[in-house]
Image 1: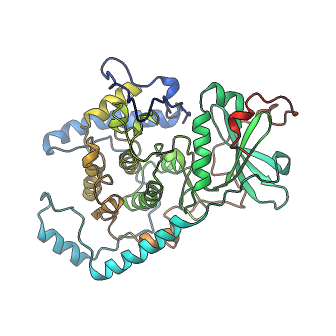
Image 2 (image 1 turned 90 degrees about the vertical axis):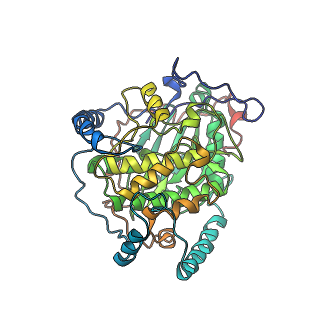
Image 3 (image 1 turned 180 degrees about the horizontal axis):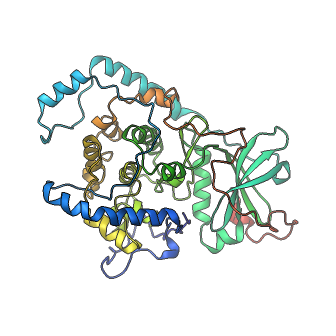
Length: 460
């Protein structure tokens, strides 16, 4: 997706007036992250959407009031998850007898048993360990661009590229983000970039990409990141069509732990989507691209994100906080299960209208517990949104759809992932899309006057 700029306003003293939604879209095209125009993938989504319209109309008369819908995609992915549910059948039957399926308490989180409470305490202790680990970031590294071989392009953006690079001394592979200073300034992304660097330099978690160091020359800024060999989750989802319930639960569980970690540090991510989720060599998630992440204690009024994933409070300029990440989690779970997000339209304005209306139907193949979870995450009123209630992230983790998840095992990466990406060596790029390698004369530009040096003092 194309990086968009953020429209920033005073965050505390003067929140902006509400958007006149029906008169004009709240964001300009140049200010929004757009899904890639491509292509074959977008045409396939639209065809699937049109083919399912007739089925939706027939089902609508038979269904009771429901919350979400989207066209059912085509083929079930051929690869099954090795991430099993652990709920015994007898206990499921007892719970079904306790509450009828439509009872309002049927899918509420259940109290912990003594053994589960002990496991919960162990999990919390281990989670605290991961929360307290020192970052791997190194201040003022003693090397520069000359110490690296820049190899293949892994991704491109508005003002830079991400390269596979090899450190000459150790022959170890990294991902290097190369950003042109003049473009960063022209597009008014200085604050975002500095915020991204500061946040990545302050965190360390199993499901977040590591930032090792940053440096600069007279032309470019450089961010040396962990290389994640498995490519984007988006690519794997596109090939599969949609994920199974168990596969989706596996990835969602790791994302829940990452969101929980970030929120414990008052960091909101604000750009959750399959394109920003990488798969490591073991098949586990690595969240990348923290350009929209922000440290926020209460609320912020900045407008940013990807249209399909925006929470209602962002669209309405009501000020937003951590709750937007739980909304985005709901959108992501839906997209993994269905093959595309629940609020889909040919243009951003149509997407915003559907998000604010919040009335679409679930595809018929959705698991009932997944539906219930999404109904609790995709709540327009953030004060009633799961994850933003008194129990915080624990309310999400204790939902019945996540029953059987070994949270501690996930943290330790002792749970086998449903997709193990193929690769031949640590620098293999076969799981990434191919980009044309265009000559970059600025990359090795000779030293000269740098008019932007004072703006990027933090990149040393």
